[in-house]
Length: 93
Picture 1 (cartoon, rainbow, N blue to C red):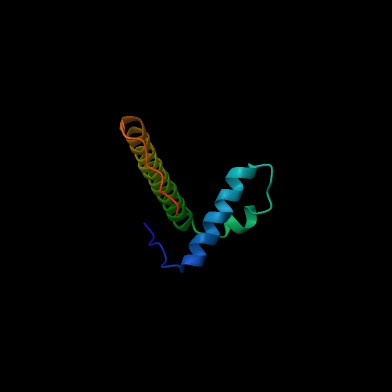
Picture 2 (cartoon, helix red, strand yellow; picture 1 turned 135 degrees about the horizontal axis):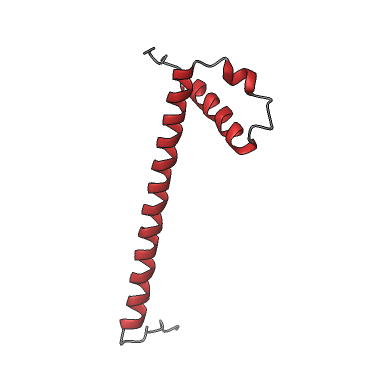
């Protein structure tokens, strides 16, 4: 098994962007075929793994934020509906 090169971040991002372009546009759009064929298979596989990890992590982050927002909203509603006292208005002089 060949070792995966230590590419700079921009290199990984470029390869991932090209892979996403191919996924979005399908096999009918062949403008990047030559470029992707020049990338070693192990680099493409590593880029796919990085992309999948980032997408999964982003999904968890989004779900965590949605849960936090939902909990805050429910907490505010429960404070509003459980309060027996009416808010007192400040008196103006």
